[in-house]
Length: 186
Image 1 (tube, rainbow, N blue to C red):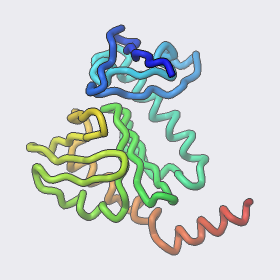
Image 2 (image 1 turned 120 degrees about the vertical axis):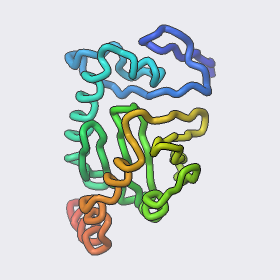
Image 3 (image 1 turned 45 degrees about the vertical axis):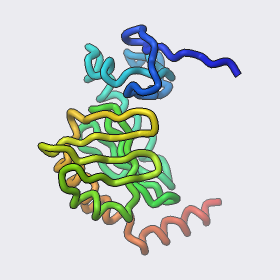
Image 4 (image 1 turned 60 degrees about the horizontal axis):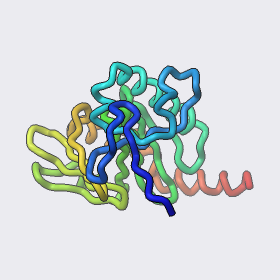
């Protein structure tokens, strides 16, 4: 297998394995930023881009539209350009942060721990580790890189994951009914 070097389409520089990156989804040509479609970009480059707001708003709209039609990973809520989805199979909350261009996964069994973190503590999931830094800042650690978030603060994250929408979504009786209804469709 040929080892290809990824190049950021914004700065045109090589992407090193320890740099914070965003895996840009495939988008329609008419969206105004299709030149980035299905590519890997430096998060810092997106955040510094003149198209940052357009990209953030548009990706959040697209994600909400798609998630609203899904059964096993449906849309739960949105706060500005942060989308919350539930994942029935893995019992996780999936957070798509189009303001900082990161994705987070939080197991529902870890929600209480997350909401009660103290500075320099962290919560693990299979996809990432969420660290609480000083001044309510968050750092997300992935296998090969980490990134400090500028937009999504700890109090805002807690508000999002402890909302009544999230609690209602993961209510056991509601989940059983949802799963039975999905099975009946098949």
